[in-house]
Image (cartoon, rainbow, N blue to C red; front, side):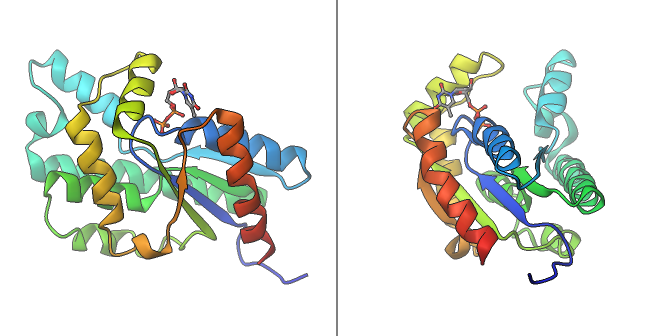
Length: 203
Ligand SMILES: Cc1cn([C@H]2C[C@H](O)[C@@H](COP(=O)(O)OP(=O)(O)O)O2)c(=O)[nH]c1=O
């Protein structure tokens, strides 16, 4: 067998409510049960912390509290630290890293908000490996919104979800993403995802 410098990295992307967390957790469990030990990692940008904090302080959201420039630096730092930790743990344990979000999510959210060209963040993230597989989940914006409502933690605006999905597709890296329609049940989407993953792991 070919020697690998690091365990494989699988990254799942998409707008809020598309099913990343559900699928990433299930994928890590299924791979592990199939004899390919895998760990789930969440690589968020701190929005669940920053937005409620901003609201408690009487502001609309994180960018409104910190200003766009500071906010993007804080968010990119949060995410960079999460990815660094995930890669380090994956290397230490030798387990496949199943990434719930990755660098591309930062680039997409910056494009969505019009935070410049992302060159500085791309430079800061340049040492992070290109994953062995990047899957972009797609669902109609209305379904993503319904799922976010169902989760009950926050709310999503339909126009924002539509623009966010387009921001992913407009990234310069998007040609390497594997788009996967994710409107089906959890089991149906998993059944479509799993062969892509095993093919990537066997490459
Ligand atoms: C994948 C999936 C999720 N859900 C629910 C579970 C969650 O409460 C919510 C959002 O899923 P979640 O996996 O949290 O999405 P993301 O990580 O992309 O934001 O939708 C469904 O109802 N059906 C599905 O097929």
